[in-house]
Image 1 (cartoon, rainbow, N blue to C red):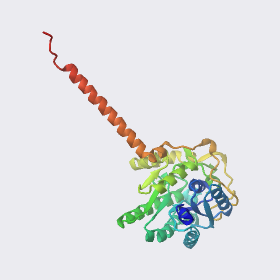
Image 2 (image 1 turned 135 degrees about the vertical axis):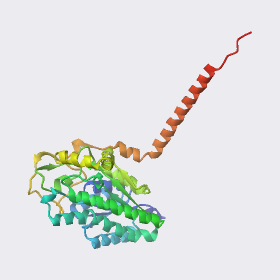
Image 3 (image 1 turned 120 degrees about the vertical axis):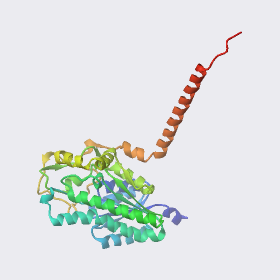
Image 4 (image 1 turned 60 degrees about the horizontal axis):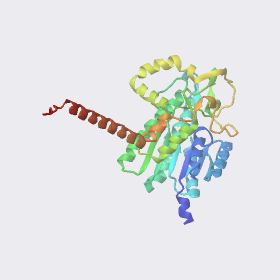
Length: 350
């Protein structure tokens, strides 16, 4: 009986689990007692995340892994299944970036961002599929971005990687549907988020980097990821209205967006204060310490998203819509009947 109860707890793999969106997602799953494989390069952050999981009533294993190394990812998956059992959910989230004009980037920087931010998702998916497909069970969640559709200046390598993830996800989903598999893949497109990345990403910007407002807390992203992981038949989710606007605006008027971003995209990604060109960054090696989930923009970031609420309460909205339409039809029908009654000929008294 004890073994059966334990097995009911989900086994979850989360890459980029030490900080930012990954760290917030770890907390979201830990609240439900999940068993979590924590993947990242920073040991300090991973160990802090493990303590949080255990304090919340879950279990976790620290896996110091660079997702750019396919064998390391595969070994991590094997370790988690040996410890916790079959993996139910795999969350691809780890990322790297460089804030820089393309003309100042190096080939090695483009390769590194691609290896982590795109191929890291591919390697995670391959490790997950190797285990999920024979069982015909499991879900792969790709943490995406509005930038998977609408690229912006100064983040070319990251935007290109997010575009590649979207293409990979679409191919994988089509193949799973073709095979009639019960393994699912879904993608969550994120807005600007208040994470530590803006203080540790390599940057050549003259001023400090910031997320393009409006800014949301990583807990918004974590709730979206958790919901998508348990409702994976939908192709993708949008965690905030700003992501919806960017994605569909680009579909309608991409050339206008190019010119708009040429005028505004540089300033909107920077805020007051010169950047230190020699500050440490995490492109090649993790930075020491526990950086947590939040960045430096708590006073400007929102914990709620109306768009996410709507996407996660579709039955409620559908019922409300049916009720409104039903009430409107009843009122309309009643009005017609009254008008018909008022217009009917009346018999005169003898």
